Amino acid sequence: MDLSERMAMGEAAEAFIRGDLGQYILRRCQEEVEAAWKRFETIDPTDVPAIMELQASIRVAKAVPGFMVDLINARQQVLDNNRYEHGAIE
Image (cartoon, rainbow, N blue to C red; front, side, top):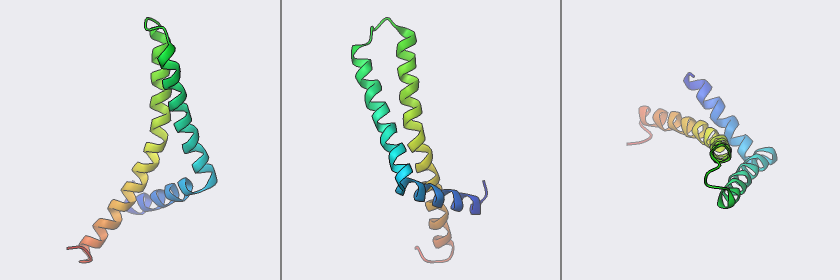
């Protein structure tokens, strides 16, 4: 992804997260993690497939917000580098 693409994607991710749909998805991801942990508390410790399913649910639910943060951070890095290269940051 080139610099302009990183800037555009980061800006879009930030706008998305601030919007109603983004807030809904982030909230649902958090709820999914919490629900998986609650199920984990009562699961049979020998039920390996069920444990693996819960682990996968948690990984996916944590990955989605992480992808958005990665995009936003990449945009911020481009902005910071640009400021540094043009003498705005010492």
